[in-house]
Length: 245
Image 1: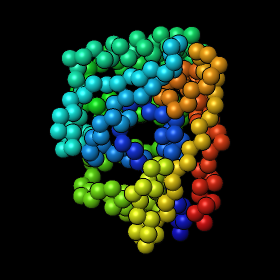
Image 2: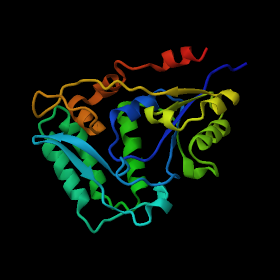
Image 3: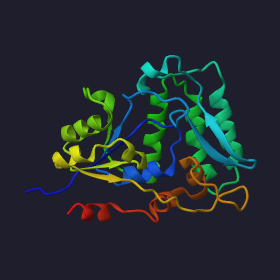
């Protein structure tokens, strides 16, 4: 009898993600790319921050977001009339050219920003898979748009868990605002709300540590040590599994 517990998590497409997303994925047995939900303006779908000599700077991908309440994330189109890719690459290059792992990391960004991207979700998926590979996170990757789910919010997550055979679902911290915990309990599926403790690590550009930046900052500064730093001070998969017993 196979009593292995299956842990599932998911997240919307985000641009140059922060560290907490990779901790959440590293705890799971399966990851679902939530590309078939509503696009939100002023969110992390198309922007994030890096640390530069002048402080934190935003990198924002311009998109066409008219009627965004009807737009699914998978359908959001990038406004390529604006030279965003060249600007983003230049910003990353200048910010991290003195970083320890600059030579190992910069090639990916040079290649990525030289490609022509039409859909925001495709760009974000390409980056996320690369970062997972670099970090050594080997978790099966699925896309919500490949399934025919019809519900929304907490009901959508529960439907997905049932379809994919999950025993436990990892919500982000904001999941407490909408998760129907009783419905999961009645279905025999556990829930865990991530409470990510942000690590402090060595950065360029001054003594003050800046948290909640893109994974880019950590990778350029710490390379292959990055996953260990991401996981430090946070729950491990083994601890999460023990909590399910």
